[in-house]
Length: 520
Image 1 (cartoon, rainbow, N blue to C red):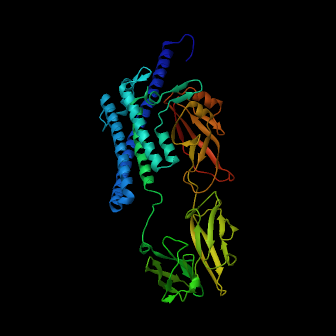
Image 2: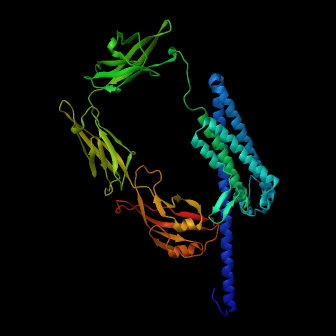
Image 3: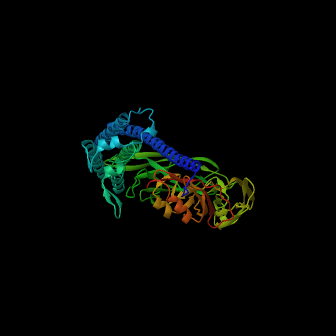
């Protein structure tokens, strides 16, 4: 505002400006409350979905316990105990959340999250000065008791990683605030002076952590190796051929083994297609196969293995069908990454012809180069078509030349995602993290190992002009504007200019915006 004597008109303009700024801040705050509400609803929906999965898993385990009680009954009993503990804890939190809605005269089915902005009622329920009320102590005890029970199950059925996840998810130790600020107990740090909608979200997060932890423990509870004392009659004989198709002049090579392979196994007799196998072909628990493939077509491989079990002989039959194919008339071409090729990157291809040496295979396409035997890359950065043909020709052993081709779609690299300190989309950070954070860009779920370099971006804070920044960090103008932003407001990082490292000539699509909510 200008200093000195002001005219009545100027005073009115200044007052209206202040009112406008206050209304803008109020609107932003209401949007944040609504965002919290949406997160709360998403968490509650996720909790119900995971509970359904847990119930389905328990049902399957119940059936297994009935079928094989010696193996599964004790573990299923523990699984029921774990499920009961989780249901009790989740029900306690769910009831507490409903009480909060009731406390603020809200309908849980159709809440007005923007009115859940004053947390003094919940503070009075939880806190008494620097300490906790009876309700606050009960809430903390419930979390700690459930954490203790989970850790007991994790130590029995899980691993170090699951123990660490549970300790982190339900960590109620005092929180370090900073070098000079000391520590604050978990209850005050998590719930005091927060709007009720934020506390609801934190409780829903605890529910989500609980049902997800149960799901992980139920899964690991029945994993691992199980001892089985079964008869040899329950084993299955398997035919393992070196390949599933052979040329007419080849020999069929492979082996027949038991389902649970044991090198110490010895056979009394092995018969394949009516002929007894010679003794030297039975070694190390295997029956070695070496015989002519025959003419093209489907072939049956039948027989049995005979061995001793106690005082009796056990005979295990086997049957397998393989194909004898003629010399190839087409090539096998596969993209190592996907069924398309992308501009801006080297697309790896594996190209070979079954039964044909690599030096007899010739491959051609725009932008194609050979790396090693059977391995190629194609770069279509400057290619203008929407599809590209990979042409292959080869010579058969009889000197005849064959050819084939494969068509691939040509696509641009998908739009990059903007990041700040590695986070994308809508994130929450303190001002300090934004000041020192690096603005970047990434390609999530893109199968190629490419690196992006950010050259510039625009920075926008509420009520201030957009600031253009060169490089990857805020400049002094941007930092100065950031200092004016209050807690709960958001800043935007957009118009992020990024390029491919090592291929700056390729123009990437528009990079997505990052929205950052200021936490302090």
